[in-house]
Image 1 (cartoon, rainbow, N blue to C red):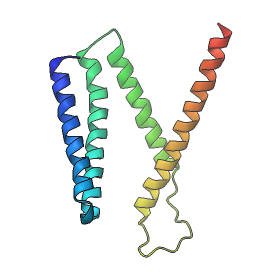
Image 2 (image 1 turned 90 degrees about the vertical axis):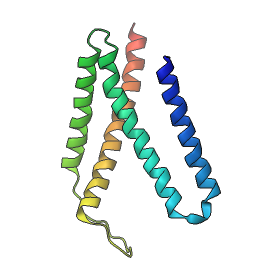
Image 3 (image 1 turned 30 degrees about the vertical axis):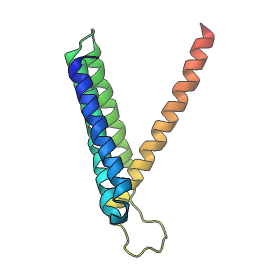
Image 4 (image 1 turned 135 degrees about the vertical axis):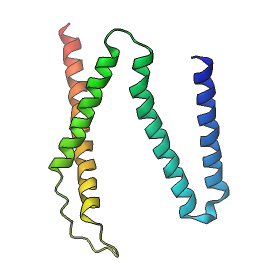
Length: 135
């Protein structure tokens, strides 16, 4: 690992430790610390996606950049399909503040995408086992 990558990793570790320690030290403040941990998780997820998309363009090994763009397109297509399939109809539940239609649609899309990815992972595991036995 290069020196700049190690420094970046250590900075991420230090910020994560500070956020976690802040959660345990300021536990009495309730939702404020949970909100900061969630925000940090969103930042880490966004960094992971950006780094995954950008790195193949710096370290080219043949068709890795084309493959990355194609894989990203497949992920976007799966997200779009799951969002289009989602109905957004409310469930019969008694809550104090009912969620909006947009919130229900995003929740449905997330659940559908999770199921699609679970089925894909299961099929990949089964098919790879079958192909290895065939060789």
